[in-house]
Length: 166
Figure 1 (cartoon, rainbow, N blue to C red):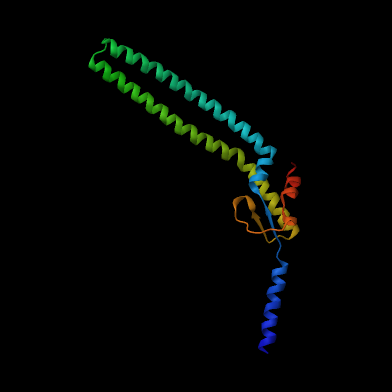
Figure 2: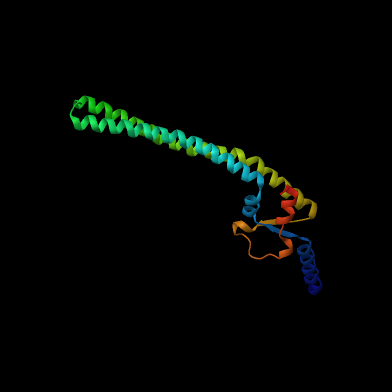
């Protein structure tokens, strides 16, 4: 009786293991080939370039003010109080530049998330839909290094590129 029970349990596990279907996709390669991501990257680059341009203007103005201060200080035309006032003004300008640099980084990050979110959501919906329609239990991301073995026939890259229109 124990033998039959053991065989029955193994048969159940074998049947359930066969019913599972696994696939994989390299999400990084999929994103790199996406025309939407390329367009978002171009828009992000333009946005970042504009912000950096403003920062460079701030730095140029600061350098000019600093150079003028150094010339005035070396010529002896400034009193100690005037030097302290100009140094405080320059220090404040320098802090503003540093603050702006942090703002730029945050704005670029926010803009990237804003541009990428609808694209990534569309890809996820398409992948989830494909997985449901075709009976996949799990789909792994081979680009993230979480895949140890896969049969070439289960690579979903071409299917997803077709479903997403690129």
